Image (cartoon, rainbow, N blue to C red; front, side, top):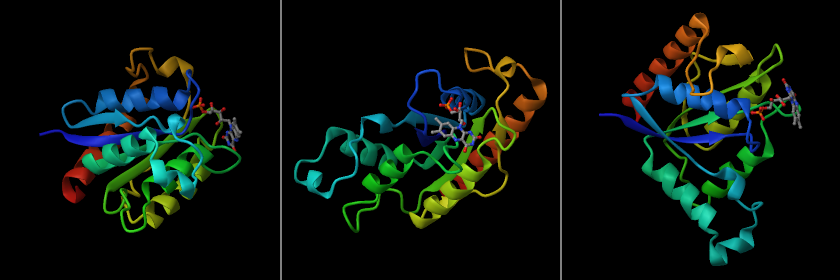
Length: 182
Ligand code: FNR
């Protein structure tokens, strides 16, 4: 049976290469994992007062995470860390106190950028945050993907064979990790 994954993409722009990477991973995971992307762009900035009348986007985030077997975050690097939209989502679903939706979920972080370090620092910071939320984090294998436009087709397929094999191995390892810890 396929396991379900709540997907967070750390970029809100429509042509995001991180969303394209997420789509490619989703395609490689077919038959093993099914992804549901959470619309983290719809979340307001964290504000404790909003719990009096909980925003629909917060309810959707918490329900999607709680219903999922695992969490995958695909993130760009912003100024040597992960973007604030991800931290905001982490904060929302960690509350109310004692009702942390992330706790105990198997999780992985990956990401891409055009630069040579390919989101490595962002992923490192993000993994600390996932651990802080009491998630069970897959540390190996890691996937730091330097974006090559010609390697990723619009339909989510990967045309570069070595990148496809590398990411297939990554997805397969995550599926096994979710099976073991989910
Ligand atoms: C960046 N970018 C970037 N890249 C990187 O390798 N290290 C970094 O520290 C940063 N810092 C950074 C800050 C801000 C505010 C922006 C907007 C961008 C470049 C970034 O990785 C690139 O724009 C990616 O294409 C963003 O991913 P999406 O939006 O295409 O998914």
